[in-house]
Length: 103
Image (cartoon, rainbow, N blue to C red; front, side):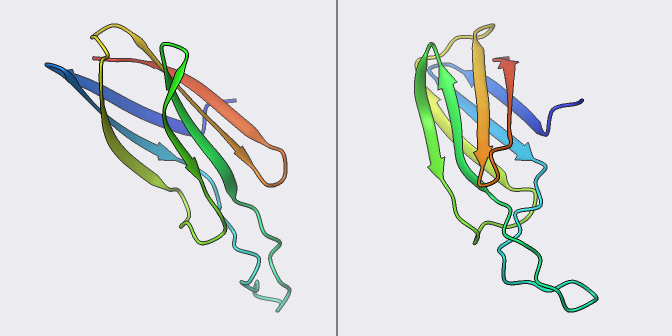
């Protein structure tokens, strides 16, 4: 199965800028379907970006985050060619992870 995470990390001098797009329904549990039935909550609870074994960005999310979330941030200390690990876990126990090379 293909990863639900698309990530790009570009190093420019001392700063690495990271952009990630995650495919996930992010259902709040308050929306109803066409038949009037409530769609159960299904959302990412924690998103983590790790560089060199250390977390450089951690997001604890709830049901208010929109479908297919996009994240952008920057951090210092990485070099071109290094690995950046991205992972998430949702409220139903599902998870995904990927590793991207810093360009």
